[in-house]
Image (cartoon, rainbow, N blue to C red; front, side, top):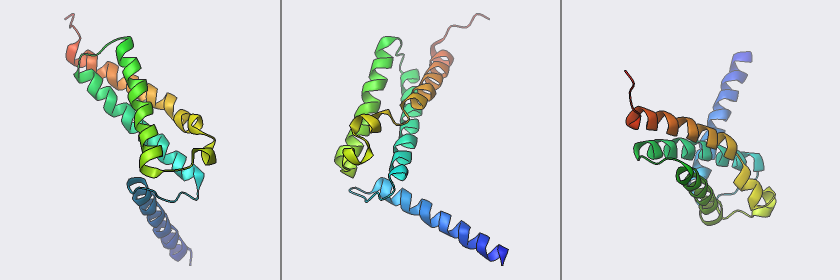
Length: 128
């Protein structure tokens, strides 16, 4: 009996994850669980941070310009996703500022690490 409940539980988790993926990539999806939507925003930011870190490392961007562009692009992509693709009511999630803050610092950290490693590996000088 325990094995049967475990397989049902695992099947329901797969179904749940499948529905989250469908809602993430479909427009105007219903998000009855607010935490689920904020989790999607969080993980989307992490992916944006890594991708922008790779791009900024490939391009020889450095300094304040790279940091400023990251903040603008990151916030713009999330704002566009929330307001144009999902069309959610920001007030249900505490306002646009709360959505904008969701996962920003961890995304920034991932961006910096990726950017520094890529830039140093491709454009750094070797002292050997």
